[in-house]
Amino acid sequence: MNAKQIGNLVRNKRKELGITQAYLAAVANTGVRFISDLENGKPTVELEKTLHVLRVLNIKLGVIES
Image (cartoon, rainbow, N blue to C red; front, top):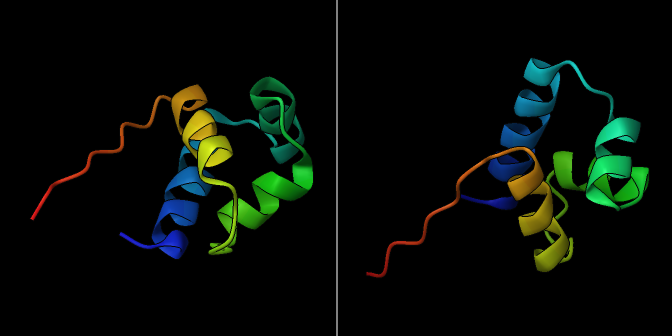
């Protein structure tokens, strides 16, 4: 999975829930710009904030060691 795919996952889940970027940003205690960057797949978004947004959206992210 890459940044673009994670961004698409976040966008799709947010839209499925019927919430705006502004609402998600408020609930996740981030800025709207961060949510936009995340959804657009910006590869340099902060990992901890990204993980927090995923938790807020109840998106589970797994790691498989190879």
